[in-house]
Image 1 (cartoon, rainbow, N blue to C red):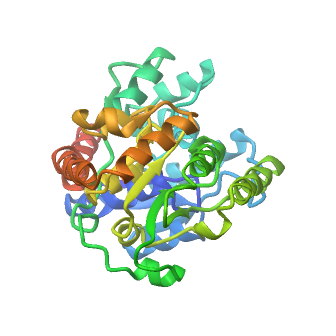
Image 2: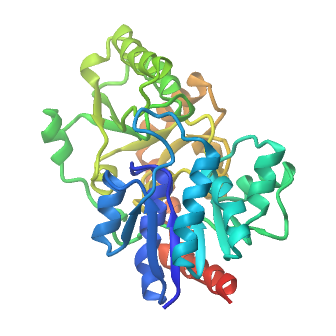
Length: 372
């Protein structure tokens, strides 16, 4: 049974980690033994252990957020990988890919790296990524961006993330979220899901919400947490609350923090808003599509690859434009039939492109080719 070492950067469960976890059962069924080099404690380690994955402690930075020297991390990686000699090394993030590329090349180990970010790279960064045998971009937009920076076209493939279409599927709302929030049945729930960071655009959402304050019974549900302790991150979160308060919406916005019931949450929403400034392939958009939920999203990165083409005019808006976001949301809130059509279209798109069984089979084929 070929052993694959999955190299993970963060202890938390965000899009990249959830996408890797979704693929694990299929990879194990294909005959691969997955071992993770990851932070030894936290939500990710717990989830990996529950799926029968051995976790070997490896931390790329301190708990305070400062990163260790890259040379020290590479020396530790040389020691760990040199001792195990796995059939394949899989770096699950761009940062870990930069770290592991030269190490895998030095040890003569086949390696693959996931490109889950659209960020500028230095020349050394490009060289470190090109040291891998194969690079998997989560969207065509991500691939195009990185090829323009000098990544090898021959090594770089598109592999969309997949979603469990059984777990995420259209279901009638039960009203449990209304009850939990103490809201009457007529309350309309519009939500957003993601880390409380500037690139996710919560500040744009708050301004759009102020423009929709006249919509009766409209409540905003915000799922996600701020992980950074930096001063600007703390100020950013405080400003979100201040913007809602200034619009008189403090009693109509509900910050849930990090949740582990996204599938159930999506089924209770009328509309999903995703105002990100940058998004290689937003996982919550994949999950919302599978749930048959209509959505309004910023037209950035790989988002057009998620939303069905016929839905673009109603669903996609300019990034950083609260007025456009509010206008698109208002139109859909006023048109239940249009919401139904968009939700059905989203589900069909998820079934056609983002079924985790399909994407995991493609990932397993990449594994086999590299191991051979």
